[in-house]
Image (cartoon, rainbow, N blue to C red; front, side, top):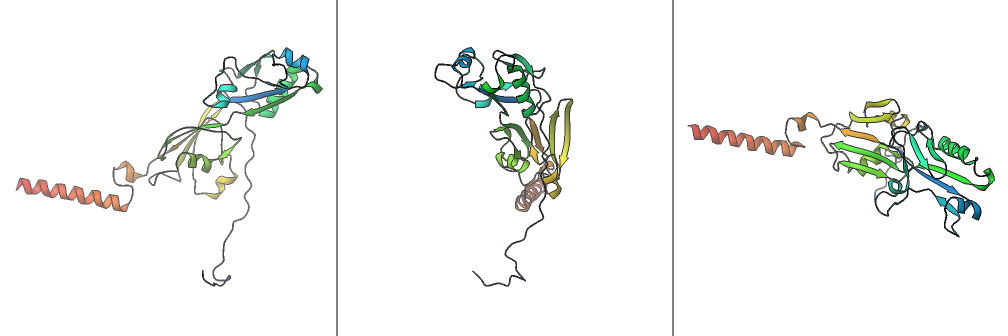
Length: 244
């Protein structure tokens, strides 16, 4: 370790705070939601088909098996009409609602059968699902069991971008109730932190395009490109010598 002047060589530098975008997420087709209803009343538990001694109702599809994505197995997927079907309540439309609004909607339906003070409802997203294609080290579909993840966390889950990926032209395809939109994102721009694209949304698809060097079939770095050029030149010389 060396004794250095703080004025000439600061130990660290820092940027100004950049506020994150906290836009609400509205449920869409194919989203998986985890719905939990709790009660302390044995009579209510019996109505909902709860085993004696179990104080909570975990709404899960009949015949669910252990294994796989726990939220996909035990949660509810919004169908093509944006509906979910719950025990006793039947079909409820959650399309276009936030999780808080979906909770209020289910509570409103429950009030026809249960007093407000006798139940508790919780609704949350069943993780964040996204796809990573193109110049990622690990292409594939991913499910992160968190309420939200940043775009950089998503890239990390996919093994980071390759050295030939266009980091200033990442393609993001995002679903909306009206359809799908495509955006090009500059990962090197600090303004990304305050944008609506900093946090990944369920069913987002990320596509990393290759730089021209990959499109031309050359190496991913200078050494590989140089080796390829030498090999090509050697092959050409051998052909010319054979012709002579």
